Image (cartoon, rainbow, N blue to C red; front, top):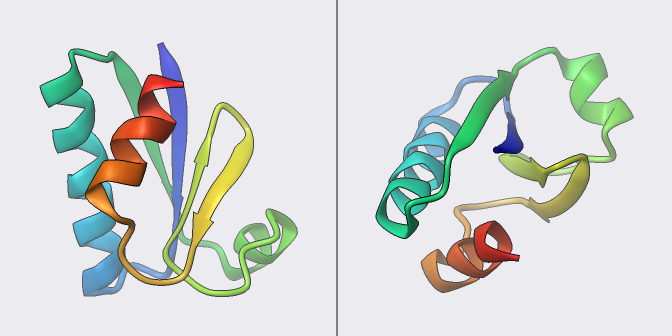
Length: 78
């Protein structure tokens, strides 16, 4: 199971990013545990300078704007 953190204050883009992660994982048949991180201090400590951010198994793979669907699928498959 992959551990995924979506970093953001709870804005519409952050919610959309969380949905994209869940949808991509489901379509790939990958079991994931998604955690939303909304605490500004925790977001900064993770190195996310622009939200939304995505970390997969502890590695920050995206920050700022909606992720590209193809890249997201690649990150989840890796």
